[in-house]
Length: 255
Image (cartoon, rainbow, N blue to C red):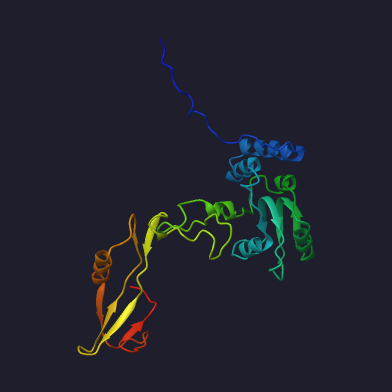
């Protein structure tokens, strides 16, 4: 009697061909599949893999990003290769002379590159000029800059989280309770930074506190007192960043 092996996790879940039925894209896949197989160039393997990718994983690249990259030493007379779209950037005043190869260019980007004396070629022309990817610079756009990616990660409002929350609007009346009371996730205790001047000893006693997260119920006065006394520090009377006023000075700098 044999053993029933679960082959559910044996699959290699990756694309081996593009989903698009565009005949021109499929001809490029056929060309670079041949080059990746018959040459030992890593460039052809990367280009073939990116030709399979979805549009989300092929973000556009602006001409300002290309110009910034091609300014670096050693990039003279090299071809910038983008497996995706090259877009215009109106913030770039002067476009340098560029040689680019891409699947697609916007009309504005193509016009500005050609007007500055540059050159635009296709991937089949690139395969004739550089079959192994010599004298090329392979670029891609930022994949994690989508609006959807800003909402991914740790829950918004928890300590050390930079995740963008889903809110209807930013204002006083929209989703403002989380972190302000214990019944809505947690209670965040805000303790101000205070400096008190002690004239009898000629010293500045500084209470330097950090924000503490006290979860569950509301903090008791004992918890707050222990928190305040735990970070007491004495400073010399010379304190250029603080202004003494009525025996109490408030400042915004931390520990």
